Length: 305
Image 1 (cartoon, rainbow, N blue to C red):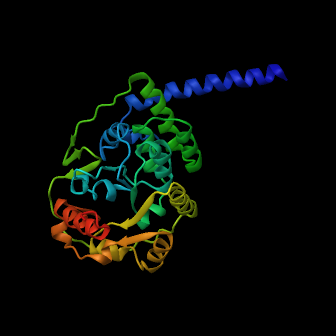
Image 2 (spheres, one colour):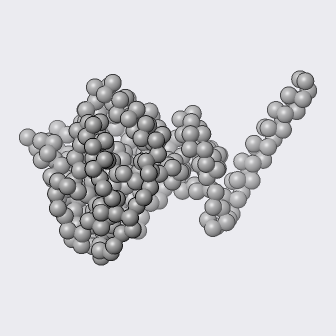
Image 3 (cartoon, rainbow, N blue to C red):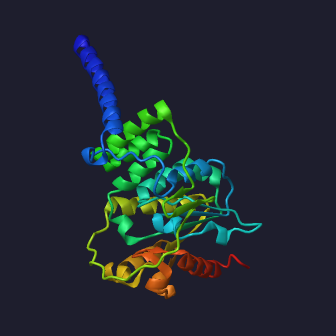
């Protein structure tokens, strides 16, 4: 029996090492169309690498922003900061509650924010979290939290990207990222400002994705953890275009659920923006829209008093 278990152990070690080596070779040599189950992108769109490099030097914030690309493209830290207010934007692309939980486990103690502004978009509760998980394991440190997240999502893309990321970063960890990628510029503090352009309105297809119970439960656990720390939080539904908002269907239930969980602002009902003037795509504000949105939020939070 001992010999059998020993053989199994040796085979497992050999297989794991062999798989990792093959994954590294395949990932480095093959174009993306030939590696659909590996999505390792260190740096690049969203500037998560820059954001996570910077967050390690932050502590004792007044405001911490969380959420998806609507957060890091929608909350311009420069508009909130003054001599007495320190903020940081910890949003990431398609961030679901699972990734939010990992980020908070790693950084919340040091950041110690007085207020969390959590961007909530209905679609993020319907996502499986694969895209955001791959982004996170590609650009942050990897530990048992990464493994736990991968096992909860249980998708081959996340497993492969995690294995590749750990091996690749051990061999040639690259922490540099250019502040400008295409039309996007990383602003210290976590915001990504995109080149000013204007959306040409089109109709949107009705979205029928249902909430994933596990994502919503994770979300409620995060809010409970913030309450346990006596950390105030505000839930914010950032503005999207009229057609995008209408495509989400009846928001009555979502709005009710959010209001039941805490202070909640749905800016699609609070303010009226122009789809052509204030957005650069169906659900992201251009800089003109960001400034109007942020100023209204600041007024509502009385941060300028």
